[in-house]
Amino acid sequence: MPLRSPAPQHRGGPPGFSLLEALVTSAIFLIVLYGVYLVYDVGQANYTSSSRKWDVQSQARVALERMGREVRTAGYANPKVSDPVVIATNDAFSFHADLDGSGATYVTYSRRDCTGTVTTTLYRNVSTATFCGGEPFVEGVSALTFTYYELNNVPLPYPLTSTYTLDSQGAVTGTATPTTPAAGGQRNRVRQVKIALTIQQQIGTTVIPFTATTDVALRNLLP
Image (tube, rainbow, N blue to C red):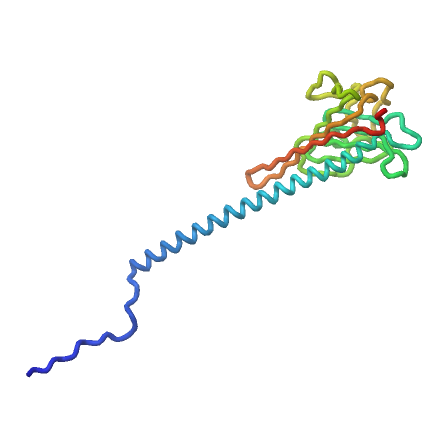
């Protein structure tokens, strides 16, 4: 009976991947990795956008809260001042009041610097002599509007226009001073101020604006 030789034995570990299998596996891995990156990138962009929106909204609200609190004191002093509203235009407001008990002073809010140039900065000027520029209060301001009303909620001027200067007294420049409000004049009849403030930030090519408004009654001038 003839002898049979044993079947050949395979030496070493299991067979490896072919080049084609390795390429297909790598391609699938890269596709999955790209999908994960897209999900992360979109999430990060949404987070950044939401964070910036919150920053813009916070700045606008904080600024309006302080402006409203100070504007509300217009006319407050001992003895009482005779010129509580000094400048009242569509984009600048100056009033006379004692903010902290140290004496009456003039407070001016405007986007205009002392050359009369409209900027993207909201200035707050506290002085007894000047009515323009001042310390930067808020940056990135794209719009600032003041609207004025009499005691019976009639707007000043009436009918309301997009630009206006009550009593023809516009914002001043340099060391110029505004005229004294006359009894019965438009500035002397202001009893309520509506403030609208728009702040915006830019992320790449995307502009994020936010507008906040507040209505302020000049409580010291109410009967």
